[in-house]
Image (tube, rainbow over all chains, first blue to last red; front, side, top):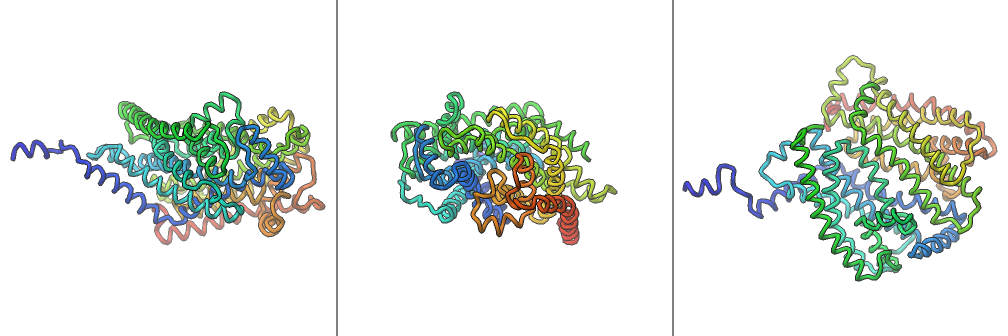
Length: 298
Length: 263
């Protein structure tokens, strides 16, 4: 009896895998419950990629003078950058929808950290006998469900509005690349969450990221149009790889990274390394903050 | 209150830097996008005319965006922190309290826009810049009109709470497209131009500001620039009044329902 008390009691017991899973599940369900109170948010975020794609489409038509010229010029310019296609509408739509997945993953984690700080519950979370990793898995899983929903809805609405057919390309491969890209996004959201915890001003950072991410992801153009140093930085960014892989399979164009097996290898590498790096970064940042001002201060 | 906002901002210097970088990134994003669609060997004058249209449109979009974001978002922050109700109990003027939230960010936006214009100027080798005084006068009335939208949106934030953030994002993109902030109105389909853009006062503000600076006739009223000027002035005067009245309506509703401090 005494041995059992010592082994399992006094708050020293380590939760088993079921309890850990329970933590992630509870966080996931709680976040979902909260967002179901704001149905308009879910609807609106599905339309955002469509607007985001419409901007360069209209801009391109204005620059080129007509839609036919826009397609021709886009083909010429993107061919020079190694990815020639006349289907610029689908190019933009796919880029914007993928960007929405990335953006929401980062945005929701950032806002979650900030909101917990502001409402004063972040410290309580740290006092709870649950691993941060499991809480983060719960939050990121929720972000993933929400962002994938927005992706699917945006692709359907955008395809109907712009008159494009994404089913012409290799849809299965594109879905495969999307799934393979998710662990890297998890890693990036850990990094982003840690940054928000450190910087504290979530709003501005999110607004900045909202534009920096599409810029480096090559949402509107192949990143090979950048000068060399910027190109290398952009190509090392995992969402750029995911975006490019999905585009190359759906639009039947060559990838900027090389043959299919290279892309696949790089995606596996990103899926393996980024979450580890992300969690490590989160841990380092968290320890530093706890040692200094504490996590609750904002 | 303005002082408090500035002090609060000064606590987050990274936010200022982030805003500044954001401007350059947006400009570069759209500039490179337009390069992707331009015919190889496009003459420099044509490119600079187009860049001017985009940049001056961008200036209006910055002011509109920040006005929409800032007032509503800062109210939302007060709601979340639980200080909104206390603020309402204080004997401070409600209008001043709303207006002061935007002062710091407007100052900063002005600096950022000036920097953006200089950046594009360097990138394309000279932007057309004419009728500066008239342009600034138009911009002043436009900002006043945007303030009205900001007040209205602040009321909507009290009502919608969390969804408001996405709504403002959606609205920003709505104006990007339907008020043709980054491209000329002529590329919008005729029905969109006639049945949506022409009904938005923001469209006239964007159109008049940029065509004044470019020294070309406005696109929405090419034969009667004075009429367009009248619309912008009327927008600048009526919008803050109507926006504030709408805000009061939302606020009264929330106070009656007891949801002012609720989030």
